[in-house]
Length: 293
Image (cartoon, rainbow, N blue to C red; front, side, top):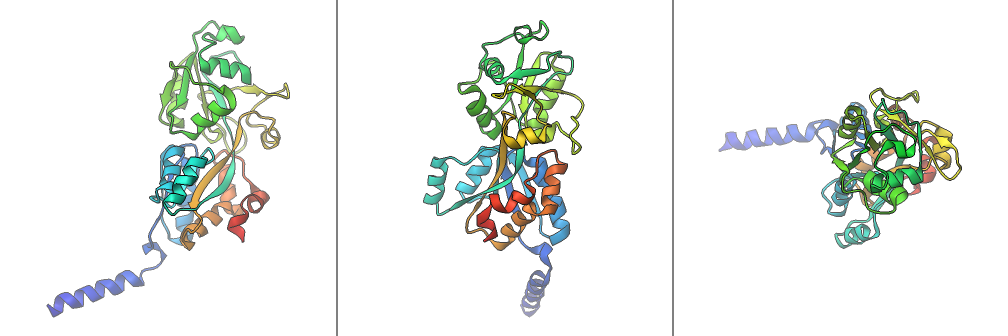
């Protein structure tokens, strides 16, 4: 018995004397758009702090629900939390705090063989509502349009519907599980069109990744703008731009807060740029005042 007790004491001392690496890891879940970005953040952060950041996808709805139900430390979202979700969170004793992490421009992608170079926001809406069914109706080839979109739990699905369609999607739209699946679908489909987070199609230097063709979008200004036009995205001229969000409990642990502050630091924002999104840079503090009090 004494030997067993001695062994337990030794094990306890060993556990409590370990460094930061033994601390509970940070759990992050949610938006597929943010998945690669936050995974890379986590890979850099564990080398700095010894604290593991476990990142999984599932869609913005999963991330927000994780915060609302208190089963994740950070919820990634490419849309804002809804009033009914905030209400439910408060009923669960959670005070959600919004973090603006970076800026995204939703890219409209087609098969590389498509001769079309631009679409208006009205044309995009008509295509995704199923009113326009052939590319020749919008100045393209005589090919049937094949719609690719996201699942309902996706923040990109919700944002595109709210800001472009303002109606229901066509029931012929193929609902992809993530950005990578959509990219591959459009790449292989001569009539394909999809919408996805910029980080999945743009390199750090502003060039586009091979495999799909990124279209310019004509918005209210009447000018055809590509999502790689930083000034147009930041000014709002590019019609499908948005913040990338994370949600945390206002009463988060210091461990979680330290990671979020790292994400907003110059080093973290450099990763935002590296993964194809637009960083907040010096605006990080201005846009997230609660974190810097």
